[in-house]
Length: 259
Image (cartoon, rainbow, N blue to C red):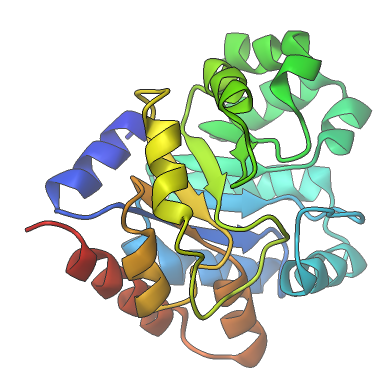
């Protein structure tokens, strides 16, 4: 299944796509794979975070997860092996969320080719303004990876035009001008932000940062997809079932979507 098919299938079910996020190697290597098995029945796509020591776009929950994963020995090579193992479990699209530094350290061609061969569908690069390095973006796309970049509520029309020009998988809209983290409510402006982006691109627009349950899922249902990250990681930390959280989000998405 590719990205386009995954979004189309969710739409046919009358709701936005649900994209769980998990940090590779958290709470342990085996714990991560166990979490993947728990979320896959609810996932239309899956986002895997590459643990990184300086995750500027992430809030304290995902920062802690990265720290734990790195302390337990997770690495780029380890994440690559986990992507292969996850690919063996599902044909759903897998996206890697990685900061730019590991890509540059491994060399973009090598990094992208290895992860593509492991079964990745695309990469999310939160700290790369794509027009700053179009050559790197082309390398990923030529290898066959979809490329995803972030837009914020403060993004201008010019910025939206630029980012959507370089995006090929979906466009990632963040609900707040801040870092990741579960929230009780999303800003009222998220609907307008999603509409502004959708006016510029035929690609799906995915909303992330703050989706934590039924109410925030209802608010986020204006988008074509939603990412659930910090709330999932927090549930893992506390030993709560991931299925209960995702079922709640799924119900919120369905309630808010037109019949």
